Image 1 (cartoon, rainbow, N blue to C red):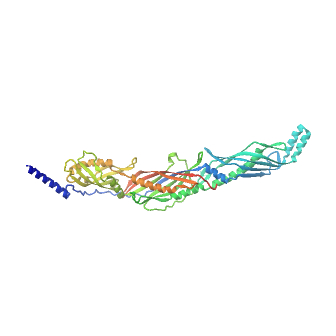
Image 2: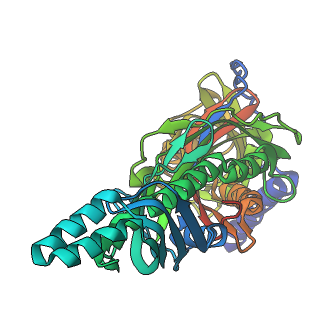
Length: 516
């Protein structure tokens, strides 16, 4: 009896050994791929990007420029009578200014300049002054009155010290011609001291103020014209405009992306009216650019706009730059990503399934509004000690859907192709029983994680923005990419298009102004 049992065991083992040796125990299925529906090609895409760059002009820079360009000494002289007490006279003014201070407040910039100098009066008393003096003297003593009256023709040459302040208010406004209109106004305040001219007190402030007003008015008009004609803002914008007009390399190498370029073409410039802070004058400027993906480096044409569009002040949440980056990936490249993420995975994950299905290979194809995942799998029977297995192709349909929170593409409406049920030989029944588990597992786990590609694109865009950075002591420009996010997906029969947005900040700081 024992010999019979032992012989039977040998026969059975020999049978399975023969099956294993010939490959019959793990048969291979070559089920044909389902027919694909052709999708219309994706149209060429051009996106709109907005770059907002608040630029701070320090009040210290404005002060230093004014200090360098404003004379320290002034003089003025007039031969016209300045009051009822003086005639046939010359009134001269020699004046020096002190240091300029610049402060910021809500309604504009306030500049203060202390002034001091000498008022010189040379000439004769006016006739009415002599008569008035004589009349007053006659009330006291007739001889005194006659003596005072004779002063009408007396020669005078007297000097008096003068002190005061000049307050200048600037309410700067941008114009469409890329200029900054300063809108200057000034107010002169002089100390109310007086000088005695032949016994008659003459107000220094009253006599000197018209002269000081003339000097200040002349200087204010000259400064206003210099500021209005200064092209520093236009020159700064032109330099950044040319830097922006370019194509930025994306992908290539080991990034998983094909060799692509992001073309930036600025088309519109806008700015908000200046805002004044205690230490800075803030001008928020913006650029609208057309962005597209091209397969080679380009040199776009970007004419500088003749006019600057004046726009409302953006809200704090809008003080950032958003660059639209559509990335076109060949489906062959996407297949490689999918295989790297699925190869070696076992489905289903639960221990209760009669069959363990391992992914050996994965590829992706498009059909209409769906994607077809072709899986080469090995199914192993788990309920018996024989561990029978088979290999076959399983075809999974699904519609791609963006998971914005996790930045991955998931597949919804997952369905197995009917042809997949015939993929397994000896364990066909057990494998077919496991296919629903496979479908459910793929629904929850089949996804395209694009973070490596996005990280590479972010790095390259960040490197390109480094060219915008500038720090030469006079002007500093900082440009930083803070995030690159996937915002949408599109596809056709050959291409998967990732619609992404790079967000960051661009800020400028002007620490030195020249040519005011």
